[in-house]
Length: 297
Length: 181
Image (tube, rainbow over all chains, first blue to last red; front, top):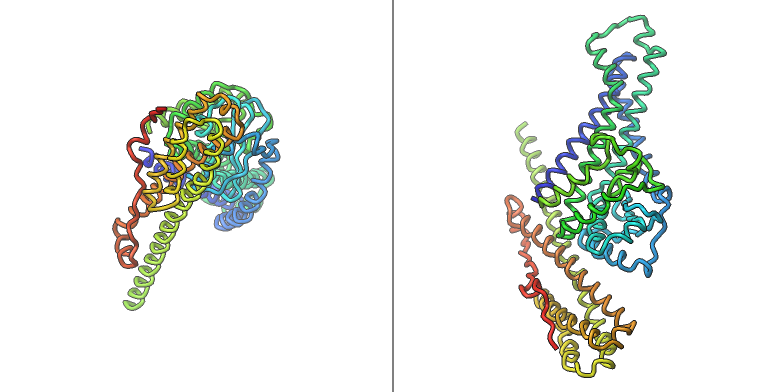
């Protein structure tokens, strides 16, 4: 059951990322088709933007996250138990010992960062450390290390970059729409098929939203995967289940959490702001669903 | 044309064999590395035990026998086959539990900071042994599966990759320890 969940998750991620890249190229095509002479050049330009933009986001992303969250490196003597847990679990997950950070915040939450496992870091709120016992904390630590080992931070950074590129190109498309591109400005020299034209314009309008959905779907998917991987490490689903129960009972926001880093926390850090939003708009699956899956393992 | 196809096929097969061979080498190294993780922890426990015994000696004068036993047994942590060492560790862990429990009957010992620190460290290393053993067994399983399934078994036989054995946990280690004085 456990290994099947892990396999399923990996397959879904591949599917979603393929969908994502296709969507990005499709919007490049649409802008090219609707407002310029050739749709191919639109795709090529999009591909070039992708190649330049992704590494840029990549490099700037992880170093900022810790600073923005207000995390401080944990003292080894003061947090001996936490260090012991992280050491044990990084042993079994075969990732290098990550740096351990503490966020001074009463909310119950934790996150991981690091594009590569070698640069991994995990952060925990003081509220979490005070509330959870050793077993529960092990579950949370394992979940965070799973994010590192599964390269989720890299994946989510790429997804965020892809969303950025799609929004950028859709924006270019919208501008053409109002101010006139080659095809429109040229007085209909080459009209193009009206149906394809409508598809192209719809794509430009809907792609940014679709991109957000896809990003969030990938994010939710990786949460389930991290839960499953965490159990592979601890062999103790109960610990994580109880930790998630305690965490879900807590409705406080993490003060310095950012929208863009939300998918790296163990549960949604910004709960108040979008309490009533439905599942499709969330970076995390509902905790009840996560608990249900954990209990099925 | 046919020669080109034959060459391409041979090159592709060669590349496949190479990547699978490298994959097996990686797994075999992981097996060794994960054993090394256990080794480090057992070594650490071997070094910590005399400190614990010296600390306890001064307080628990009636327990010399238990203390002698653990001192002698500790050498088995660093000698012998992996399976023997793990079994020795399981036995030592039970003796250690009874030594830790001594603090209940000797309040002075319970207040000794050195004792508490050693107790924490020995418990921590025991946890690490458990986790490293889990990793070791998983790595061995991955390696053996790759070694025995088609078509990688052909490559494994060709280059003489040997089967690795998992570390078995003795039954009694899963039960709660019985402490007697």
